[in-house]
Amino acid sequence: MDVILFLIFAAIAVVCGINVVVQTHPISSAISLIGVMGALAVLYLLLGAEFLAAAQVIVYAGAVMVLFVFVIMLLNAGAETRRGRSWMAQLLGVPLVFAFLGLMAYFVQHVFPGSAEVRFGAFKHGTAQDVGRALFTQYLLPFEVVSVLILVAILGAVVLARKELE
Amino acid sequence: MTGVPISWYLILSAVLFALGVAGFVLRRNIITVFMSIELMLNGVNLSFITFSYQLRQVNGHIFSFFVMVVAAAEAAVGLAIILTVFKNRSTLNIDDVSSMKN
Image (cartoon, rainbow over all chains, first blue to last red):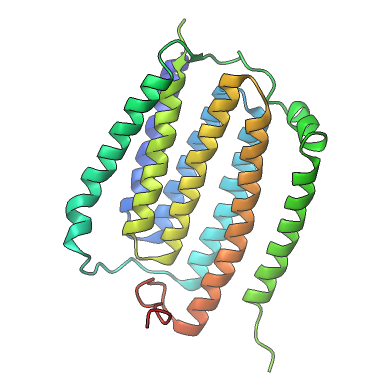
C-alpha cells in the first residue's frame, strides 16, 4: 500500500514538475506547480509530517500560489515567445540533467542501501505538538529572527509595489 | 508489508530539484523562473523531511518549515519586484531586462 501510494503521488509530482518546465504559458505552469505541491503534501503525510503537510497545502498551494496566479492575471502575462537560444544549451542541457540524476541515484543507492525503509505510521513525532515544542524551545531564536524577516519582507513588498506619489 | 526505500524519496527530491534547475536555466519568462525556484525549494524540503524520518528527529521538520517561511517572504518581495519591472519596462522577458550588462 505504501509503495503504491508513493508511486502514484511521485508520478504526479514528476509529471506536474515536467509540465511546469515545458508549458509556455505561465498560468499552465502555475497550475502544474500546485499539482506538485499537493502531491508533495501527500508524501509528507506518508513520512509522518502531519503538520508540514497541512502547512504545505495552506502556505504553498494556498497563499504563495494565489499570489503567483494573481500577479500573472494582473500583468496579463502571455505565452512565452521562443527565441534562438544557444545550441550548446539545447545539445548538452538534457543529457547533462540525466547524467546528474543518474549520478545522484547511484550515490544515494550506495549511501542508503535497501535496509532503511519508510513505513506509514512508524514516525509519530511530526504532529503540531511536537513541531511546536521544538520550535518554541530549541529553535526559539531562529523563530524570532524569521519573524523579523517576514516583517522586512512585508515592508519591502509594500514599498516596492506602491504607487509613486507625485 | 514492505515499505518504500528511503533512497526513492531522495531520488524524487533530486528529480524535482533538477527540474527546477532546468526551468530556471531554460525559461525566459521571469514569473516561470520564479516558479522554478519554488520547485527547487520543494525538492529540498522533501529531502529534509526524509532525513528527519530516517533519524527519527523533528529537527528536519523545523528546517523545512523555515524554508517555507523564507519562500513565502521571497515570493512576496520577488513578485513586488516583478510588478515594478513590468511597470517600468512593460516586459516579462528576462533577456530584455539587461541594463546592467554594459
